[in-house]
Length: 375
Image (cartoon, rainbow, N blue to C red):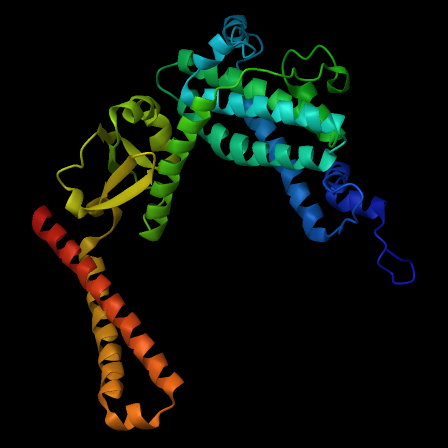
């Protein structure tokens, strides 16, 4: 930066626009010994991160028991996460997020000892936004809003509180103001965050649960991608057949409500089996990994008659273009007089068009067979 060049960043102006915590966090994410490009994009991104942290805090607070409900708080506080036997008894999403948190605490503690502040900030950012906010908070709604009552919700409340308060501890050196404000808002805070104990190291984690939940995540992403590809109405719930080995079905089926919630499936029409369903030929087949597959009925995904009409028009247009390319290649004058690279270009376009025609015809045949079956 140079006053002569006029590119000096005034920290007071920056704080007024983006906030003190966002500025501190942006500066801390730089690599020690290297110049940092203090761009508006970085500051805006970390301001959004601060807002995300605040909104996550609001969600946690709104879903904790009433402070006057001593019985509910006794149940929530009875959960312990510092022992292996307690951790493995948690449901899969809860065991996953707590295990990932414990790995993060170990990494952050070791990195603080080495003054690798940028690594801590980036890893905590990724865990909070990618694992906690995007995945666990959404999964917890299957517990919090369950019709089975407070007994199911209490485990999610305990995990939300435990993970969030430890995230605040990890982020406090970077973002002291927003983290202290959120900490003080949490129930039963007996001391300020800045003097609270640092999270323990060498806490238990369950690698098998991490792997299992990642397998479930892959399935959810596959269903989401299929819904996007077929432009399924976001509010529409679709049925599904989940195919896997007995071992995989055993843990995936236990999280049926979470799977249905996060991938917008009809929870009452999700079936688990070790063989493909009878309507497999009329379904969208998804493979997500570790032998976990899903079959989504086409009738749930799209308006088949409208799709047949659309593809038929598209096929007619593609056929016309292909015939034109073949006609050029069949002309001796074109082949003999045109430059070689031009001829090759037309040949490549013709081959590509032919491949698309075959795929479209196969798609149409599948859709028409689906219409016959449903009728």
